[in-house]
Amino acid sequence: MRTSIPTLPDHIRYIAIEGVIGVGKTSLARMLAETFKARLVLEEFEENPFLARFYEDPERWALQTQLSFLVSRYYQQKQLLTPDLFQQVTVSDYLFDKDRIFARLNLEGEELQLYETLYAIMEPTTPTPDLVIYLQASVDRLMQNIARRGRTYERHITRDYLTALQEAYTRYFFYYYKRPLLIINVTHIDFVQCPEDFEKLLRMIADPTLRGITYFNPEPSRFGEKK
Image (cartoon, rainbow, N blue to C red; front, side, top):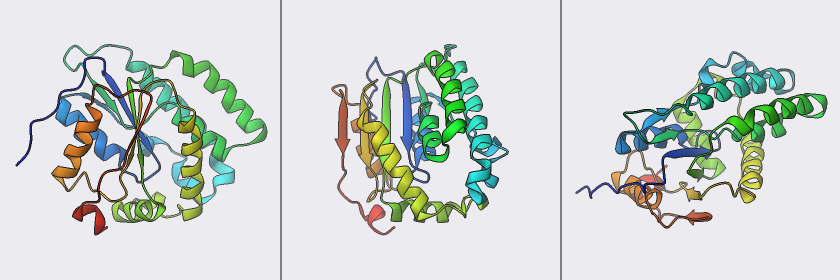
């Protein structure tokens, strides 16, 4: 039987969810937005005209892909500064800062310098989330999730790239002190298929005592174990 839905603390009005490709950011964002009747902001990755070409030939298309994402995310985040009278809470499936994580992984030299210059102009005018949720999972689980959803342009993603991306995220969040950060290991749970797993996450996310960096490693569920 489903338990009562926890209430978000009053100071949590903007939640951003982060994690490596395939970890479940968008799924969790949709579920939280529905649960808390929140405004949903989803990354417009499918509108990036360079993304498929980047996965096929990263060196050639990295700069175009990164700048396209930067501009798209910037304008999307700026819109969040306009209050929504009907939805007091916003849930996003990305953090604006993530753009820099990918840029430092994919760019170098003058291309990275150009990107850093543009990022430095844009970042100070974007909103800062009240809570950041960082989802972690093993590379094996990520590869399974990516294969399961079957996006054509993701078929070129390699284990090495995911591993490097995980390391880049870990380095970034090791020094993240802007807002409370909740790090959740979702390797052995399935919050989409298992209501009990989702309720575990809800209780942590709505915890009014969250401060600094909090690690949450849920007990494995039978749904997560069979993946």
